[in-house]
Amino acid sequence: MSLPIGTLVNVVTVLVGGAIGAVAGSRFPERFRTTLMATLGLITAALGIRETMATGEFPLVIAAVLVGVLLGESLRIEQGLERFGRFLQSRVSSEDLSGGGQRRFSEGFVLASLVFCVGPLTVVGSIRDGLGDHEMLLVKAALDGFASIAFAAVYGWGVALAAMTVAVVQGGLAVAGGALDGLLTDPMIDALATAGGILLLGIALRLLDLKQVRVANMLPAIALAPLFVAWWGA
Image (cartoon, rainbow, N blue to C red):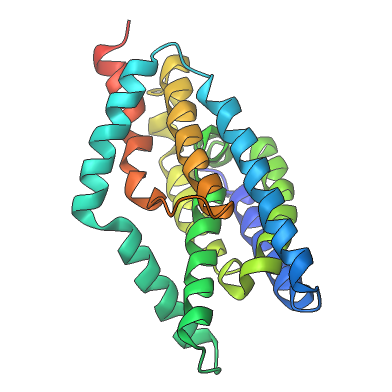
């Protein structure tokens, strides 16, 4: 296995971007941060809509999402991530944050982790990274760096700690790159992209303050969608 340089660079860009946004964001007036969050929501919605058009096996993806939600709700994935975010906040901050501050920190950690780790670029890029082709993840690293600045300007230091999630998810995929590279077909990757797009739409609803969708509880759909296409696809 090749050294996962793309993953390492991605972790660094999220850390640096999150730190810049957390420090600089407090200097912005509230109206700037409100408009910035709405803009992030619209951009995320646009990305989600684009990704949902990727597959020709949409009914199977919908089935995977529904089954994934049942599994994720049973496992309480989002609640676990939020607790982990609060644990991280208690370890890295000496400040006794109010309930609102703790929620914003954990919300930033959860949302940034989802945005940075959902989608075909994460999966395919990480697999190729493990095989020695770092180009896709280096592009993703640059995009995530700028996104982390914007997210951290609104949510604070929790966004920077999403670098841990990036390291675990992308690093794990890079390690498994050799095995997964021969298993994922183009229709399976397209199904994964569509499931990821649906999750991104859920994130957009949260960023736009329209609906607090528990997107993390939908994460099993990312794994189930390509499996459903492999088992029952045309």
